Image (cartoon, rainbow, N blue to C red; front, side, top):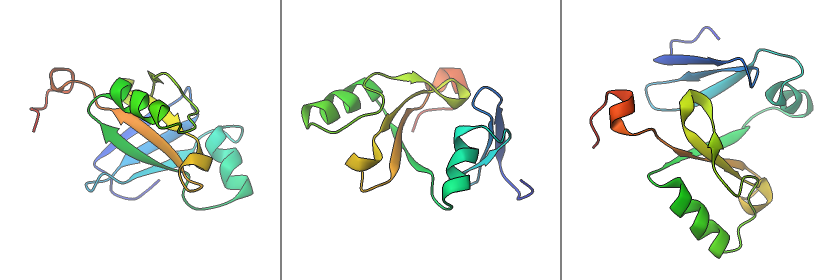
Length: 114
């Protein structure tokens, strides 16, 4: 990617590079033709997923389960940048894959909360 982004993260394990812009829009570019992102782009183009940052991922998942929302990840897993993430199935989100992301505590990032 050659656009000016504030922060880049190469996720070798997931075989893609993530770039985050100033307005917090993320773009994924496959770095391996066999990756999930590359396979998605072979079949279709456009939006892969939407990420929603939540304060308490466990509470968010509990509420979604209570409401009967179909989840890909019923429990959190480790995502890019060491954040805990979980995905909502596209069939439960209007055809769009939705990522729920719990940002790391402010102490881990060096940023003040708020």
